[in-house]
Image (cartoon, rainbow, N blue to C red; front, side):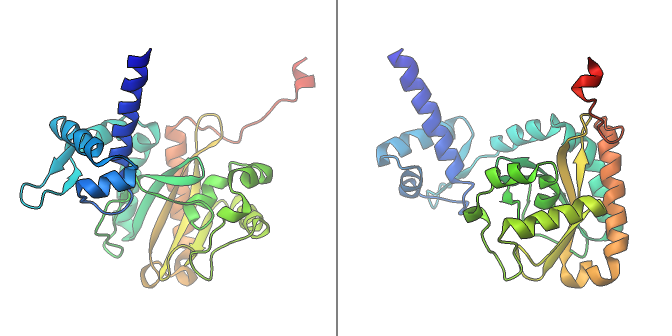
Length: 268
């Protein structure tokens, strides 16, 4: 039992070491890893050596800095390839990005944040980094608000206490009353929009993706700089494209229409 506890602790510490590389800087010294993972220097050094031997981290022979290893890509690829939303959405999202010239993103909800499954850059919305695997707040994004349409107002409040409605720009929604109104608007229109709520100079249009149960399984958005997305002129065009893409993905996931719940007394 003691041996099992020690092994579990070693696994947990190794996972903590890997996670520190996703929090900001791509390359870290042993001392950086030890501090961020709250480990002793010798423990951090030993874990990094083990992870390096397994291919999960690489060490630059000149600088001595560590970065995530390429074997992590194999694990990530296997996860994405087995995910039903990723399988159904990938080609549709890629085609949409090429057609509109804007970024197209697909995300799911992971606890109290959104988690990007994939993104494609359009010619008018280039990025120097990959969004897949990153997280963003639910209340400050079109994707997040589309994901939140699957929850009741009470569930949203339990998931996102008032102190989690953090302001990122002067336009960010910071109260549940505002968020409720925006969610209701999203449900009524079938799509949501976001204008400089997370980052100045950027906007998006998003809609929910449903699975065979009728529940919200994911969301898709088109996004880009204000000059390219031009919501004032293009909102109707973009919302139509987003809703059609989400419908196609939803059908691929087995969605056949609104979920109809039969009252229990009728079953009896």
